[in-house]
Length: 243
Image (cartoon, rainbow, N blue to C red):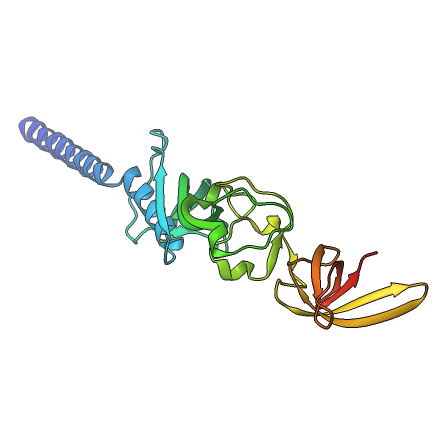
């Protein structure tokens, strides 16, 4: 009887030991495959940013720093999902949320550095306040627009008829804030000349010899007499002769 108990006890101990060892190995195997690779999380965030800002004519350069090594994420059975707000402005530094969308999943914020290169207009020569803009005044250059805090202009058509609100050095990026109003009068335009003296007003047809906005001074030729006078722009197509 004692021998049977001893044998049974030994078998039970052996079974328990084997069972514990198997269970431990199973947990070890599960643990070894249960960690989400940090690089896979970073890759999802980077790819999402590339796709979000990959507009025609753009060149996107994005990189992320290694995640905290102390971060242990459970392996996600579902494809990871990066969340970028639809109207998120391009910034040189940004954070993207990466989610494991399964029940009980997790969310990680991935810090990124972004460079978004686009072709923008820069001054090809020194430009003065009040100057109009033509194709000869600007050239296209590739710039990282995340660093152009004052905005930028991509197409000369965006500034048609506009003048400069301030002077620009050669190579300066053309921004919306650098533009003034549209020219009320352009060189060669037929304008109405108004002359006032002692309460008397006389009007005549003339041809502008310069361009300008409201308040700009320019020369105008009287179409009837051929005389050239100094005048000031007062409205679209209207100038006032100066004494």
